[in-house]
Image (tube, rainbow, N blue to C red; front, side, top):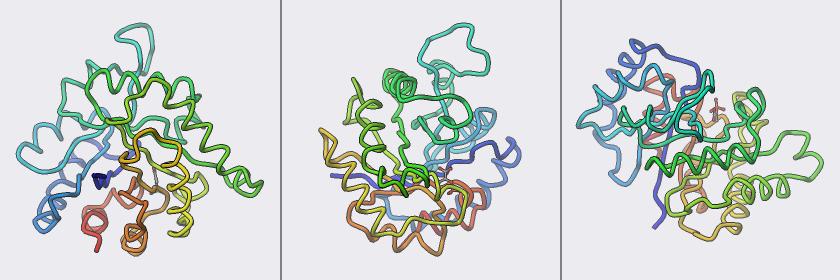
Length: 241
Ligand code: PEP
């Protein structure tokens, strides 16, 4: 059975104090949230401790936004699996387009990060998606199939979430049409050995478009940036109808 996973990606937003303030407004909105929905907050590393200490007993899971593949070493600015294990981290975002675009992540390093996440017992959320230029050139499927093929070498598909995030839809307010997102996610599913992998859509998911997106048969959840920063807005997304 495919699981529904709704994850907020806070990117480089929220101090510890702001993360706790968010929880105060958010947790009370989850009383009616169906049990079969996994709710995840992918927070900055500095907020993981505060979240871990304050989510005890709540149904919200914690995610990190990166993981390095080495256990220790001279990798300034990176974070290891053992460091993340000190917190109640369950998910790790890997291969987000912002990491690929600004910090040099490639399909090869994404693959190493995915394997590291699984080695430490986390569920990686692999992000894939095409640029506007690639879409306009008719390359969407080829780009995504390559990201999936190279990213998933040696990766256990029973412990994995994939997020289809068209880059042109991230942070732009320009959501991919629900039917088109559903189609591309279907293409992704055809590439997998395990058809039960949860595949999310990400890219300007908002309270006013989440219901239509989640009504699509292939879409198993959402990876949400901007709209996950405000408790009421993210609660409305998690409580989609
Ligand atoms: C993201 O950061 O993964 C994302 C989808 O952002 P937004 O929802 O703001 O487009």
